Length: 231
Ligand SMILES: C[S@@+](CC[C@H](N)C(=O)[O-])C[C@H]1O[C@@H](n2cnc3c(N)ncnc32)[C@H](O)[C@@H]1O
Image 1: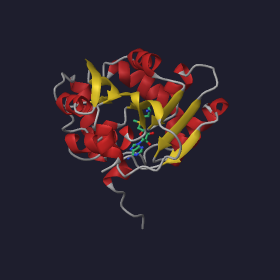
Image 2: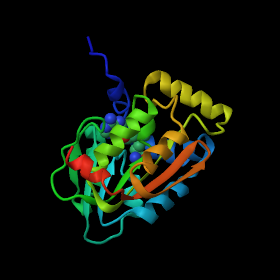
Image 3: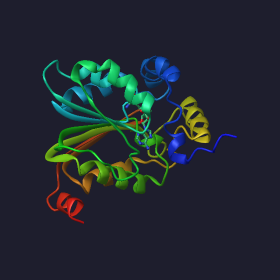
Image 4: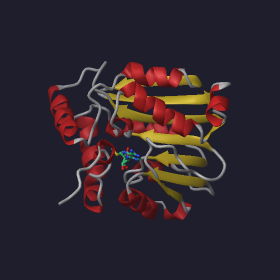
């Protein structure tokens, strides 16, 4: 008998070598434009603007955004994901950058050796994580800010269900994904993302495109990082 998956595991167990082989076409080629109403080009622009040569990517999927936006120079790249298939799939694609791989659950305290990062990407991950939006954002942002340089940037996007105008088909898809545990965004709101950024970063921005919030926060607030590093 197979053991029941935890809520966190349901958010990443769906990604296998097989599903990853059509993930980019289905999510970034089709769903973004026709269901979530946020063309993938908007997300690529976010990466082009904020990715650095000392980058940590969290929730890597296939590695598509890194492949398309990392500059072809000597750089430091780390990939973090709870799912080994995602790490291996992305690492093969990004082999030329010799990425460090970290298999970790983002909702637990993270062990990432070495110096901090100038940029951290968190794309389409928050909506996969279980928990109340304020709580999961607090855990994830706190976990990641420990590894962000003082002037570094955390950026990404997530599919919301509250504070947005979701078309009928998007609502249906979200309901079905939430029932299966692939998404856990039933209460995810723009307000929770803004609050999470505002309390931690000196500058931040959020934009909504269709069902998606695109966000970045730059410059960890004085005192906040010290409290994280010396609790
Ligand atoms: C929807 S995919 C997004 C992939 C990629 N960032 C993109 O935009 O195409 C979510 C990714 O987050 C990872 N993930 C989900 N829950 C996680 C968790 N609790 N800890 C670490 N990674 C997680 C999944 O394995 C998957 O790689």
